[in-house]
Image 1 (cartoon, rainbow, N blue to C red):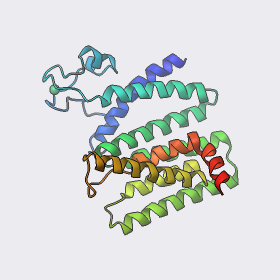
Image 2: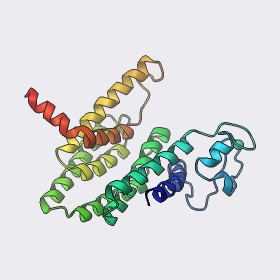
Image 3: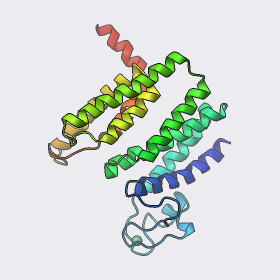
Image 4: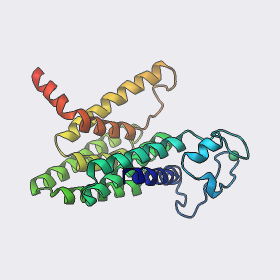
Length: 250
Ligand SMILES: [Zn+2]
């Protein structure tokens, strides 16, 4: 079953690639045909088989011989591995498993789309909210938890909305505020505070590195959504250990 999920994940990853590139441009995600980024040649069905088609064509377009973005096989592979892993972790509870698949997929699309186009698609935010709601149902969240996570979502949104206003709508995007709402809803308090802290920390580090290596200037804008997501992942993985360390110091 785990291997079947891996295969399903590879094909879903192929669809996530389509969402990543079409949602920010407002293109049709169901009926639009996939084409080469350079020569616009429409792709045949056998050129859409995840990873295999990339390997068979040596990572190049069959017509113009330009390199196909490494994004495509990478997203396919990551999605396949993630779906199989999520099945191992949550496969026993169908609702929890479904919500984890939805949340992973939507967050992955947001991460790459924001990095590539600096746009966070609203539809993916809606999917994430549905996923978090399903997760709350599957886990039987208490009233206290629901209130906690609801307030965390609103507070996180308000914080980034405030930043959006004071930076005159240039520093942060409104999409960052909406994404913070989703992450607040998912993490609750105090985890959301940690996630935002990690996001600013990693964002500042990467910003300094990019400036020192001359890849970006002080003025250029870096998408903040990926850092918010990274902050949430770090919190889920290391949040508790970090809190223990912190308490030793105060
Ligand atoms: Zn081409």
